[in-house]
Image 1 (cartoon, rainbow, N blue to C red):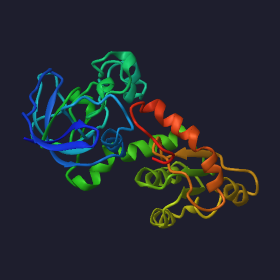
Image 2: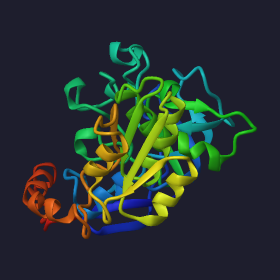
Image 3: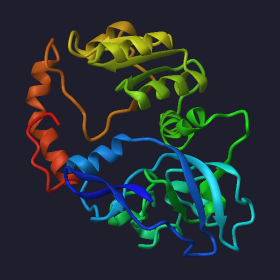
Image 4: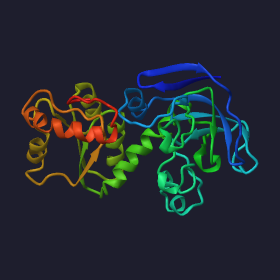
Length: 294
């Protein structure tokens, strides 16, 4: 089959590789019908996250059709349309039963202290071959897969594999209460979905902070208040808009590849913090040479 394979920083190839097979009774094989690229994949390509193993298939967002199941998989059968969750989970350990499936104590072959097990990641996450391929092996399939109804298209469902749950969970972690005012830093795809999640979880007002006008226009379409950090200081703008009170909750929808303002009143402050930012990136990606912005 064809698959997108990581061979090194900046070296990603479309290779012909062996078809996956069932290795464990809890496995399933899924024929991928839709897959997506996440910002996390870009970390591996650019080297801003270390520990990748050469030969790992990339990708952790997919929709597909089950073609085979292990004997312990009782919830699915060949022919089922499914969403593949970006993280693997057994469904029965304490963490899974508490709803913390990304912290499953069982799924990661490196042991319970190794953390999240997700498709197409570094050695610390498994590694488990990813979903940017024609077929994929799905460990712990009974809890990692979700059946799709016929009236939901692949294009609609792909958002539920990773990116929408990420945004929704971010809004939950922010502890949004009905009537709260919320700031979302970063208005990319996750940021847009975080805005939607914040409103649906009860926010009365959501501020979208970004430096790219097209993103801010999309945020406006969701009835968000927009702040361009290249034309005004976002902290001062939030203070002014809330009569000095500030917001009730903040969602960071950017992460390690954050950009600092390159113009406007906030640019000087960003320049002062550039060295600190570079040091923080170096801690999570020690092999990467980062100069200011990334």
